[in-house]
Image (cartoon, rainbow, N blue to C red; front, side, top):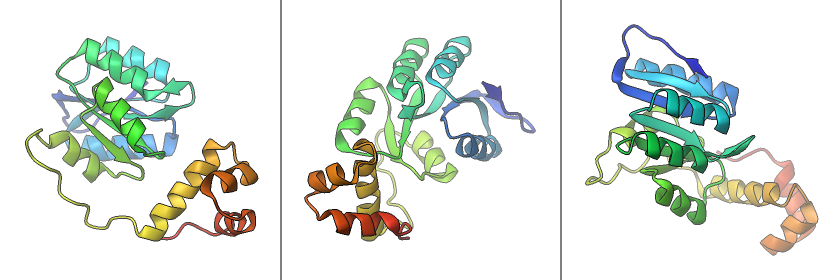
Length: 184
């Protein structure tokens, strides 16, 4: 757990950022600190829960899948510590079931990675009455397809045959797709 400091972050804008990707976590922490949040970071579920109880945040951004468990555990603990907290879930494995679980646990929004600091700040500032603006540069259909295939591949423990069977595609076609770089 590392508090980040800037010129004068507002304590009323305390934010807990929990993500196990060190580079992403630190980059988002710096960017959100520049936007006036008093950011505390944590790399694990355990550290996130400890931080939430030590200093209940007004805002939180939690990754769904962490090395030692689910970010949903942290959402529940933050809700207990501060029922008014606005919590955003981040995930690289976006699907409807996990979005519903996040909202039921108490998250107010659900963002797919790669979400940047502007997306997160907008989601945190949005009131429940307004619909968020559509993204300026959404992922292309090819990128969405590639992300979906790679998500299923990871869920199948990187087993090409099982992934091909679940996606109802030929194994060699899947291998060619996996060998390519991600589309823009």
